[in-house]
Structure formats: C-alpha cells, structure tokens
Length: 235
Image (cartoon, rainbow, N blue to C red; front, side, top):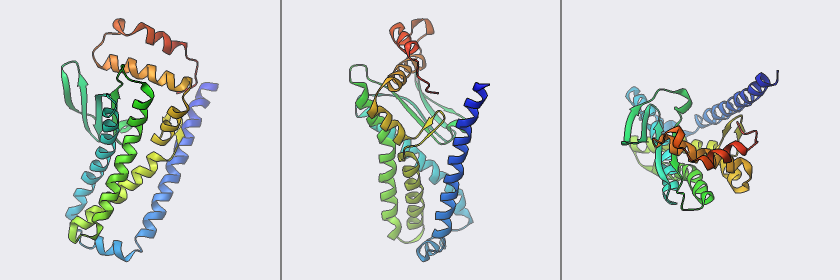
C-alpha cells in the first residue's frame, strides 16, 4: 500500500510545480504584451517567423546543456552524452555517434560527462552543474543586449534573451520534485555532501563504465559494493 503512494506524491508535487510555473509564465507574458517596446518588436515578425521559434528554443536548450559540458571539461571530465530535442550525440566504444531520439523525458535536453578518476569528484560535479545556468545567464544577457538593434535581429535577441532568462531561473532555483532535482538543488546537495552524493557519484562511475562498453561482469566490483551498501531513499 505504501509503494503506490510513494509514486503518487512526487507526481502530485511535479504537477503542482508545473502548474505554478505555467501560471507564472502566463502572468509575465500577459503583462509583457502591454509593453510598447514588446509590441513594437513583435510587429516586425511575420507568420514565417513562427517557424524560427522552435529553432530558437532548441538553441537556448543547446547553450544550457553545452554549458554543463564545458563546466565539466574545465575539471577534466570526459564527454558522454548530449541531447537537445530529437538530436543526440553519445560516446560509444567506437567513438562519438549521432542518433535521433524521440523521448518526452529528454525533450528538454540532457548532458552528461564521466568524471576524471585522478581528480577530486566534488569540484568536477560542482563545475558540471553550475555550467548550465551560467551559460543560460550569459546568453540571456547577450540576447537582451541585442534588443536595441533594428528589425528581426533585435526581436530575435529579445526572444532568445527572454527564453534563456526563463531557463536560468527555472534551473537555478533549488527545486525537488520526486526524483527530479533542479541544477540549483543539485549544487546545494553536492555542497552538503553526505551519503546521497556519494551514492550518486558511485552510480555515475558505473554508468560511465557501462556506456563506455564495459561488460557487466567487468564493472568495478568495489564501486558496485559501495553502491549496494548505501541505504538512502534517493529515487
């Protein structure tokens, strides 16, 4: 009787968070439409420009996920996975390969890097996590700085800046819903340390070995035993 409830509660929390987020976006959007500057900028757009909006959103997601990767690279982490919308690049035993992916769970983007075993894990994770929000904030500043330009360039800059600023806020604010943790919450968890972070690190190492082509029987036995010894309630 406890298991279904354990699944329902995080789902309700996620639904509430999504509803509140949608309400916030709607309120901000409704207020923004009253802005003379926004109306002037949107006036230059045509129906054709609607086709560019999904591309702009993919660009915003790509910059955020690339920021995660660059943050990890700064501390010697190795590329593992990069997903933006339906596009996926992943490291395989035969090198980095491109493939199509159609999964709602990864539609918002995903990036992963394997840790450098010769360096401390904590700085690697902190840099990896912080890289995404920092990249989104920088893109938001650049986009909003281009608002003063004339024509479509200024309007596209406004759209890019607004979308990227929204991504920054959503990911930087500490938020936990079931098994999902925002970048801000992950950063805090790594700073705190403890068994939950150690368990996550052990699982990252095993995942990296597996995706790198290591057979299950050849996985690091010491890391497996370490992961099995944890008794945390992390989903």
